[in-house]
Length: 403
Image (cartoon, rainbow, N blue to C red; front, side, top):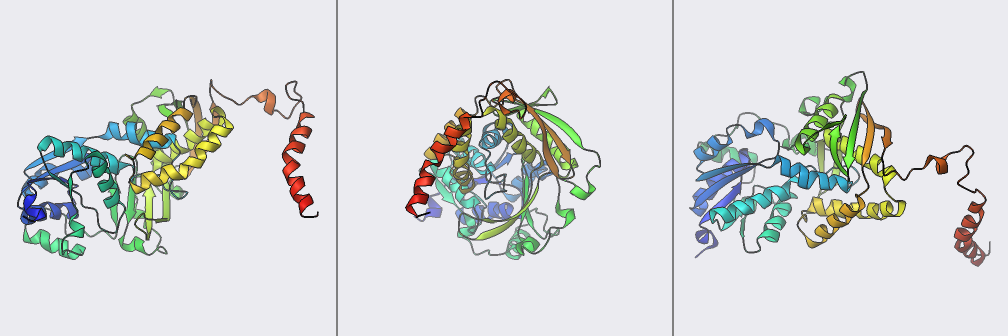
């Protein structure tokens, strides 16, 4: 028996776009088995409209549309923000952090349905194939994985459109976009098409979540964000659920032109890729969280944690969210956040998010020690011995060099 003939039921991660719509039909034709379509609602907005109807028309035996928004923000986005995770100095990992949750739920549905295979629509060039499959295998080491882009002969958007026409697959094949996009509650990403030339500036009509800084409101917006153990819990004193808090900050950030990013990043598979991102609420929370830490976290704890940020970010970007090392890192990060509580005041203005104030009952900032005015708690003469002791190795090094 061939591998295809052994597969009895497949759970497909289905978005309803051109690729996964074609994949759904292709699996039915090539594998001759039931295909269950699964969609994770992570805040794609209008992209979720009529998905169940489209999947059934294309041949799905069953459709799951799972609302995972609260879990997404609470258990994935907020833990990542606690780590101040940023990939290559700018990317806040909006697509990367969504993949482990999507794949986790897909494995759960496969178990529930008695399916022996899972399938994704990621190409053989990108990061997502790695993120999906590492998660699949971390949660079910015996699952069969189907990656059509590494199997079929369809090799272009044109060939996919022709396949869709052949099987009357309901996809929007008449509207051409000069780029591809991926959206969730945390961000939206754009890549490919006209963006493949890193010299091309993104068109203004591409952006969906933010106004341009030039066209943002002329008055500054002040907000206050409350944190508890590193987790944002309220805006302007109004306690909110994780989803409602992020939605509110997305709206405010978007109105003020905050959260746009245009970078050329290094994909895990080896090549460089140009990506354009909008992360309005996430950008605000990232800046606010660092400000909260600045007055509540011990210096050496902070510096040690900061040394882990590149590793944490890489593990998230590469797809190792459910690895043993990532589990250890998350526990370590949680330990650093116990006193990261208080309030941060921010000024939002024309693409800028500026810290305007911070306070905490657990603050380590002591005005009596820090003041430039007269004080009775710090003897400045003590600095002489401190400097001489720390300079000893430098003096020895200089003497060795004959200076």
